[in-house]
Length: 72
Image (cartoon, rainbow, N blue to C red; front, top):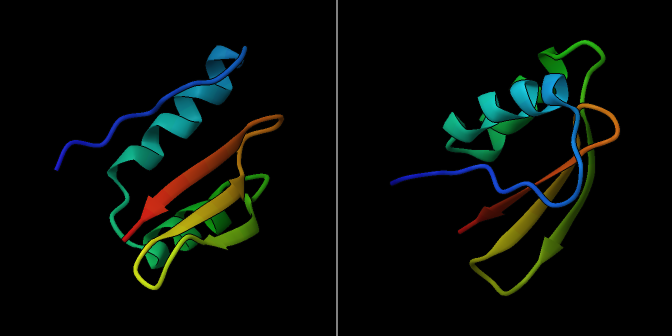
């Protein structure tokens, strides 16, 4: 499965480089472990339930960016 980083709005190149590493994450556990290992750590902002199988996981990533992971 190909994952890509889609940028919306202006993002500093250094923040973009830090966020790009997240494209290889496959599970919510990996997202949380990776995010908490960052300095400063990323924070879980919200989990939006779309239906019984699909959730959007919103993480406050490298400031001022947010990362949204579409999970199924």
